Image (cartoon, rainbow, N blue to C red):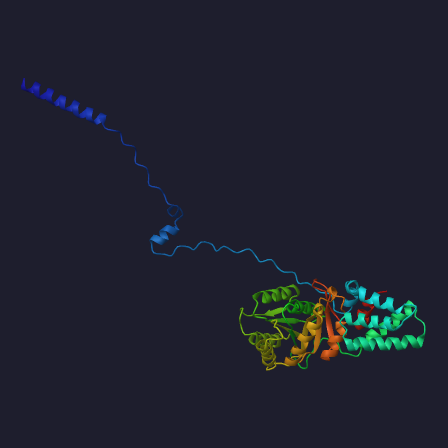
Length: 382
């Protein structure tokens, strides 16, 4: 009986244990370990290398897009430019020429008519003394000839105007220097006359004539001036020397000439800051720039840029600049915007130097070597 009780008790315990086992959640099979790529290939990953103390591989460097290349322009040569731009000049000077021809072609030339001719010349900024001399010479020749056809009057007037402008003056821009050094040019003038633009256009003229050019941005008062000069230089492949805004202008000019000598360019053009002719300090600084440059090379050309529309005020400016630096030539800008072409004669008489270049528009190739006969022809028309 005792054995039966023991057996029953064991059976009950077995049933209880079995029920508990059935009630427990069944565990899933264990997943096999994930195989790393390095383990498959036999190598180590960047993470493994970092964990092992090895430096991680740097990400690939992003290459910036290439800068657009600037196509170097080939400007036209300087010779014959004034003839090509004659229409612009004729348009601005047409009234002056037509008025003179009309007065000289009258049936009767009395004292009032000759006085009117003289006044017309003065109005064109030719200057009182020059206007009087031209009038007297014309009056004598007309009285001697006795006839006044339009062709004859035009011929007489052209001869007188060309004589006053001067055919015997040396108007060549000095682009050659003795020895191996480059020719050095300084461009000076008051504010607003267009000096920096003139430097860029002059560089184009010289490149068009087959020269190599370096531009020195010695106008350090305006950062825009150096930027503008660099743009001009880039377009024709000219070197540009510049410094930060406010740098010493003489230092920039000195470095420009030095680089020009080292790189063996033909011409160095130095752009100077615009300055009022009444400011003594600024004018003295201009003289300093020239003196510093000449420690390395002679300044072969000092071009004074004058605005042709300023008339008599421009002449006052010119006189002061001529006292500070030795002016060798004049550039008349905006000549297409005024009917006062007589200023060419007056400038030359006052300064004793020739007009070498004239600006006749806003285009890059609108700066032309001055040619007296082509200029007078444009004034008088066909």
